[in-house]
Length: 398
Image (cartoon, rainbow, N blue to C red; front, side):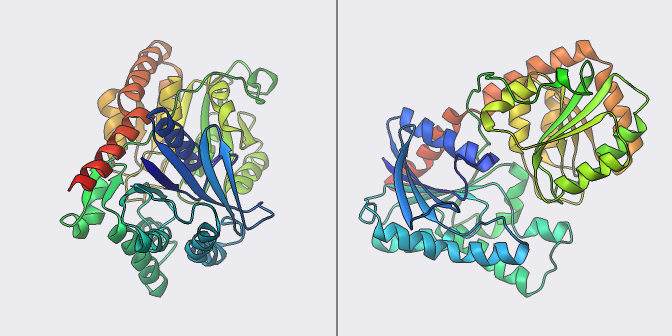
């Protein structure tokens, strides 16, 4: 099958989206299909560039940086993205490509118009990989009110639901947000996925840092308003007398600088911040750590399974999760006994859970084995590709 994959991110970017789309494309190739990734590229000197990356055809389209500037800038850039991509697609050698299916990853919510434009020329089946219920979560966190801006984004999101034959949500409870579409669309749970990763080493060598010899709690990924990582700094401050514990934060995001400066201001000797690393270094980093940190602002009502959770499971790390009440991820962690879950705002309670995990070395070994088993069962690219292909081929037959 000729399959177009639409995404805002693709390597060399290091985001979870980029890694997942790379793994999805590679698995489609292994399954005998012909995927083509269509992606904006802020560093491209020409309007478009068609290349082959590890056997995957990639159409890169010159675009302004989606993440530079504030929320207004991002909204303007993303809203123009469908036309920018479509114009470049029409000028490229792919303009008459007989697509069998189009699959896209959301966020962004703005691929709906592009899919609609592509579908005017040729009918094909469509699959939306929905990883983010936007704009609902921004209302939960009081970033946005239910005013004109909310109504605009809600309408844009509705368009992508309308053009999707199948919508793959990452958690069963997110189906409530799509209730109005449930009769007209196939809505199913599509788990996140991550390809096997070899330990190729990492530029971060904890043995050469103040965290050497400690039981290390690690956080990897985005550090922004949706994560509310400050409570872990509060817990670290309470635990400074324990010289056997350490906290490592690796990534990027709107709160990275503020959090790092806050840790320095407090003189937290048990905390280390490091900027984002390459995806191929993650396995080497996690091999040096002991427990993975998950963090979601407790005001969230949407349900997420962060990519970092898959990385922790793959590496066999137990997890310490501070999340919103009632989410499916918390239920999974508790049911499979993969670590500890906390819902609340008390640093003292987080500290208590930190000590509990740190002091339970034998139980952590059992958690590690269970984590790897859960990963292999639920989160492989092979399973994701099989599910997506079943959806688009079944729909085609119907």
